[in-house]
Image 1 (cartoon, rainbow, N blue to C red):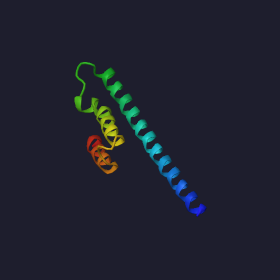
Image 2: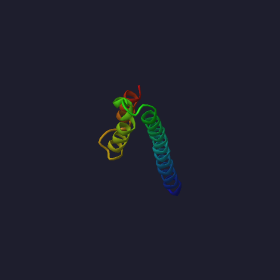
Image 3: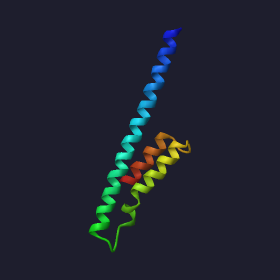
Image 4: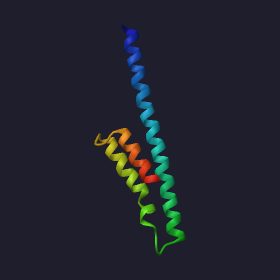
Length: 85
C-alpha cells in the first residue's frame, strides 16, 4: 500500500516538474521574441511591422489562457504554431 502512495507522489512530482520545464521554455521563447522586437524597433523605428511586434504579446496571452484553464495545452500549441509561422 505504501508503495502505491510513493508511486503516486512520484508521478505528481514528475508532472509538476514537466509543467515547470515547459513554462521555462515558453519564457525563453518570449524573451527571445522580445529581444527580436526591440532590435526591429531600433533598426526601423519609423515603421515597425505590427505582425512581428505583437508575437510575444500574443503568445503571452495564450499562455495565460492555458494557465487559467481556458484553453488546453494542445490548443495552446496549435495557436502558438500559427502565430510563429
